Image 1 (cartoon, rainbow, N blue to C red):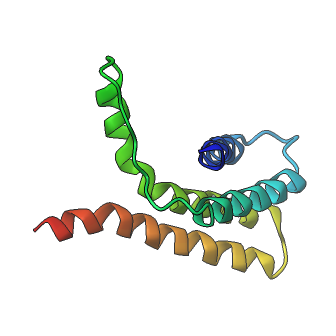
Image 2: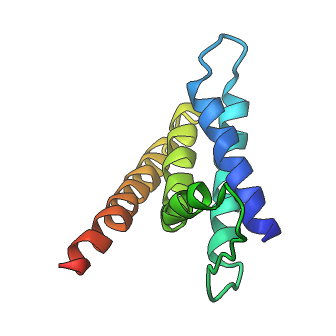
Length: 122
């Protein structure tokens, strides 16, 4: 659970990094965001958890948590998209295209993770 929490925090941090467009933002910050995003993605995939079971108590926030937990399957792909765009902004060599291909791969996975349950339900 600690790896998952760290991955969620890194995803939120990458989103803030990508939206922030002030001049003090250097290429090094984007490179660090790329590396942290890939590390969080690897930690999420290799965490060894066999199930993503979520136990909810009878509190008032349970419906909100149940709604948000539907997006857990999309979280690794969101990390790939954010890390790819961060790497695209941070690098200026051939790594820029590697980062862009990672973002495209994450976009395909994100689309599949959102559409596949709908298509399998039919």
